[in-house]
Length: 83
Image 1 (spheres, one colour):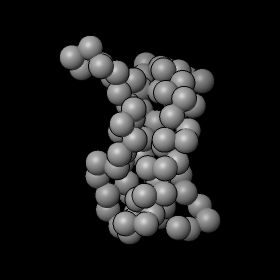
Image 2 (tube, one colour; image 1 turned 45 degrees about the horizontal axis):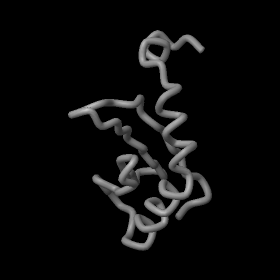
Image 3 (cartoon, rainbow, N blue to C red; image 1 turned 90 degrees about the horizontal axis):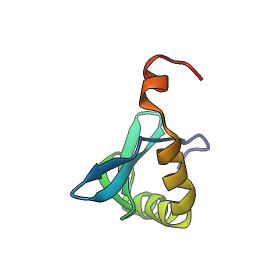
């Protein structure tokens, strides 16, 4: 992987009583999207199998932090670019 990998976490969603969020990784033109809490990459454009495995391991290791980040996302604040 490149030295520069950007990650973003979506707001938390709820479906059928289960919470989830999306984690997106970007590295130049490559992009992968995973879903927590199952910590699986669900969409991949350009990362090889080994890199996908590393991204999934990262999500597992950082699951508590990623969940907190998703819970802290305020979509209205983001929409209006207010911090």
